[in-house]
Image (tube, rainbow, N blue to C red; front, side, top):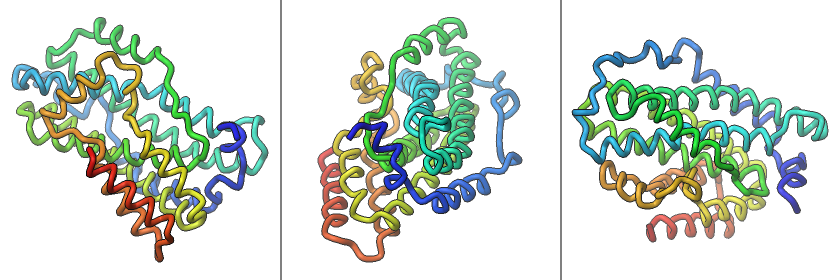
Length: 286
């Protein structure tokens, strides 16, 4: 079955009332009054990359690339959860409700990208023109998540958001520039809310669809790669380098996925047990 035919099948989607509850919960926890903007949230005149080690500067550059790839990431959701007449009405209704989340999510992630780029410019890491071109070269490359079941997009994002949140916390704790520390705190707080939404959706999938989503989730973990792992030049060498700066390891997020499964499932089936064991093995092998 192709990706399009599977993700556009209503039976594979989360029941719309369940999705609405998850989206409403996220939006209620994210009122506009708690938002922030790049222009006024920080004292950019005090940003000073001279207070960072070379490794910390490299880490900032790396995560800027990751966050700036938001257009490609957002397009994946638009393509797999379309809000047009290419899908039947029940699927459209589901996707339209999800869209309330994805547009807010995209706005916040785009703000992250702008904040990190602004820090690079304000602190002296990069000049704006050169950085714009470098980000454009990577952002221009194609990006996709080749999944067949809708739950897989949420499972992937759950791990990615938690891993990013944890890294921002850890990097914040070792840098000596208060401006960068404040930026990273804001980013980590947002990523924590994004993770909570993905965890909520995953829990609802497990409660409503049970064993049928076990194999799709397993496939996500089996082939998990962080965004840009296959396109960013020198990604793996760079990732290893920043791991030394702030203990970067995306598999640490797997423990949180296991907790989500444990909370969602009242009585484990054999298939769920096998999934949890598999996730734990992937974590121990990292």
